[in-house]
Length: 312
Ligand code: RRO
Image (cartoon, protein in one colour):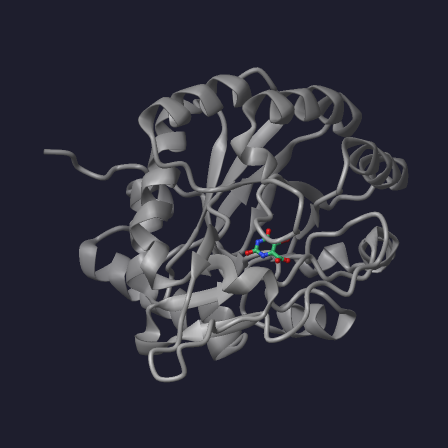
């Protein structure tokens, strides 16, 4: 089956890529992504300056394959590293490049966006409004006024189509209010749903210890346990953002969950926890599984079933 897609006007040979944060901090990580069967790749969220992030242990899978918890704290090489990577990237490879930016202030996001615009590259920006793990920095995705102000400054600077990474929302009124904000910005082309479910706590039963060190053990939850929250957010924004696209992320461990994300309305699917646990071979496996599901169901393209979840 054909699992190609188009995002923000750029063609992806298949809909799968990494969730920002996994396998994408260094050039060595990004090389693994380039060599994989992913349809695209995105870099680790960049701040203006390099950051070491929070103390370890700061990521762990959870027992039983239910998911993961992390409080990385935005470790990254600083935006100039990713700008340099983007300048040297082989865009003829047919695998488009996405760049995640997560400035610690609006002024930093402005400076970083201006630098990428000045370089005039074919990469696509995804602004991260949802890091749950920087002590003292609330997730901007939960402050709609601040997010609207940020978008009103950044959208005209970026000019071309771009996307934003959102936290999960849990209330219909919040879906409505957030969508009303996003619909004000014409070049906001896609929303990526969801970032990790913020500030969970994982405790080892035997030792009675928190599983990660930062923030008294609090961290973002990902993997299978967040699948249904992710599907709800994908579908809620697919329904509310006509003319925009949704990237689905959360709980994809096989072709089946990728299929469900597309049914909910996703135009592309990112993989975080399962990529971290399985490695870049995950893309070839899930692409094959999804293609097999489509053949079995009689679907030739993603458009044949995108957003077509049946309600009762
Ligand atoms: O680096 C992190 O702690 C992190 C980020 Br920026 C994010 O957006 N989501 C996440 O789960 N971890």
